[in-house]
Amino acid sequence: MTVEAPAASGVARLPLRLTLNGQLVEIEIATNELLLDVVRDRLALTGTKRSCDVQVCGACTMLLDGRPVSSCCTLALEADGRAIETIEGMAGPDGLHPIQQAFIDNVAVQCGFCTPGFVLTTKALLADNPRPMRAEIEHALTGNLCRCTGYWNILSAVEDAAGRMAEDDGEGRGARDDG
Amino acid sequence: MLAPFEYHRPESLAEAAALLRALGPEAAVYAGGTELLPLMKDGLIEASALIDIKAIPGLGGIARGRDSALRIGPLTTHRAIERSPLVREHLPELAALEANVANVRVRAAGTIGGNLCFAEPHSDPATLLVALDARFTLVSVEGVREIAAEDFFTGLLETARRPDELLADIQIPAPAPGSGVAYERFKTHERPSASVAAVIRLDDGAVADCRVVVGSVGVRPLRMGRAESLLNGARPSDDAIAEAAEAIRAEVAPTEDAFESTDYKRQLAATLGRRAIAAALARAGGESDHDR
Image 1 (cartoon, each protein chain N blue to C red):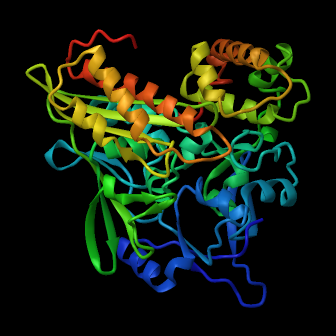
Image 2 (cartoon, chains in turn red, green; image 1 turned 120 degrees about the horizontal axis):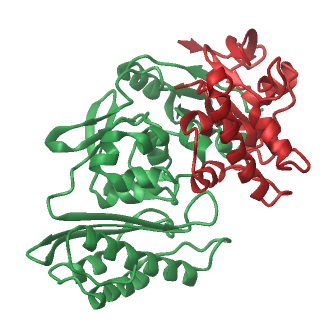
């Protein structure tokens, strides 16, 4: 496949079809658009934050087929035919996801700017490793920066969330969802 | 927003090679994008075209290759290497190294081929692969050639890969029986400040063969010829290890930059060198009573 840039605009465009928070979305994008810009500015989901812009801080984390990626440094075309999850997809009809509730109950949020990235990274971690050790949580979250909380409450929130999801497992909620 | 570019997604190596030749050095090979896209965003790299190689079959995956070598396809992500049962069994030091590259997001998207071809001086895998005498296969319209990792990295962000060549395969020879492998690094941010890889083979209680490579502190991974000469033939001892570490301190060629002083880089290289040599000797079955 080749997408040549038309001389008029100088930018090649292509159709993008993705599953965004469980819903099929079709949108025409430019090859040089970044996933973060498409989701925030064109699909109007602004829960994902731009911060460092160089894939270091984790504020722009989205899940791409269940794995965390830096949407600030991911071409939107990578989402074609794949599933994207953002913070807006976490809460269900019954209310907040247990990870979100655990962050609130453990006061793991101050300004909240980094929180969507932490919550999504935590979701991917617990899908892989439902009962992580504290050191495993620290390792998984090394790439998410928080300038308010000092991290301690965040680590506690993740441990708490793991416990809640293990308890909920029998009811299907919080079960591992990406194998 | 990135500057506009043509986007190509070849479905065979031959198609990719033809594109690379036709489009010239202005085209960039694109896989995980973790090295390329940040620099394109900053305008430090201007690519008129991206050649996305992710649709080419056979460029991913991990297998046992010829002579029990570990064969890693260049499209393999850091995460896949970290979690590969084959790598964990046959080269656990590489799995451990990959588990600590950058962060979970970079490991999920970034590929080992991109990491190597970018030749960022602080690359973790580059340093270990030079020590392990890995071989890289490069493909172009003119054919196929193989190059040793040691000869591949030629300078700051520079490799022996021509712009019309594609890295198609990575072969890591199985360390000879009696060998110990170690990789030590120090980092306070995403990439290491200094790293040392050591591969040492013992025979009859003495060093029969060794490769010691320092990464991150200079423009490319560098073999420490003096330290290797001192170690060859030596019996493992704290004195022998300390002598080799001091040789590393003298032999490294630290880059001057705004992050760490050159003295500090020498100190890090010597300390990590001592640890890596000691660990490799211990794993090779030596009787070093070092204080790791």
